[in-house]
Length: 212
Image (tube, rainbow, N blue to C red):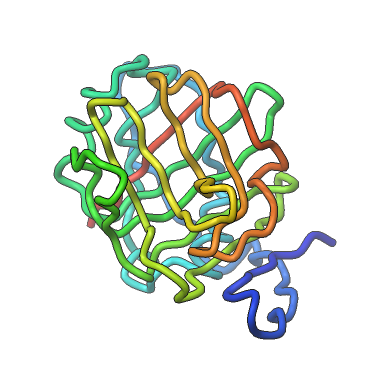
């Protein structure tokens, strides 16, 4: 059986492993799309695991909407900002060329705020990785710093989490979604790069919002 692991802080004992979501609890939905055949990274299993083990209850009965897809919308940073501007709370999901999957939940809209010191967001945010198709490993805010999310249009970069010894981000995607980095961070207490890769090439990149 696969399990869901939720990490909240490296300074406290790890929480117990949680069983994966039951297939007959509830069925979150993705809002239908017209005229597209672009492949989805998101699955119902990922959605259920996120809803049952980390996302605020407000999202439990909302539909999910794919706001941006690299395969559908192309590698345009401006397109990302435009399509996500009206949505505060979003989920980013990344699939690398080595087929590793990981992502983040953010509580503020992705908007241009250049400069390395201009982090924003809140402690409701978290990062996660998908070790297997039916499991989820989640890292919640530790309280060590407030490096939640960063968005810089000048460098076409978004970043999530920070404060590691080497200055790494938990997730950083740049170069118009072609490549990215991941490393240990104090923000979320992830001791290793998400997906196990310090550097990665992006195969697909998605952003999801929530609609009533």
